Length: 181
Image (cartoon, rainbow, N blue to C red; front, side):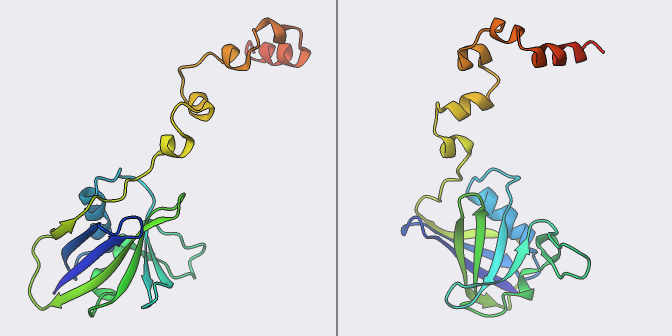
């Protein structure tokens, strides 16, 4: 079966993407397609949530096995097929692509047919996708935190302390001696 999904963003009313995918495809395939389609950096945590008609989250489908123990049920993207959850029009999901900033896309099925889908594809689009934030966006360019995280700084200049200020500290001298052991 072929499933058509519409992706929208709560950040931009002009943005949408319509995706055609096989019901036999996994949520991991959908995740990877969305990442590629929107030019998102790979390797970020993400989850799909099956929701009700009011977008309230029900079941989670995770990128990795998040079960705390073996008795817990866990839906993993690589093992969960689209057709297990999307069986009729108007079914809704939330795709969380940025856990740190609680950013997501809203997904709704709008057409399910008995035809075979050979290739996942974007069949319609409008607007610019939400930008995936990186650490520089969160901290602000040129911030002290960014400078601390880079290797291109002189700690003495940053702290405004020359090394000689620490030479008389017995604890620092002691730890310096440990390096020789």
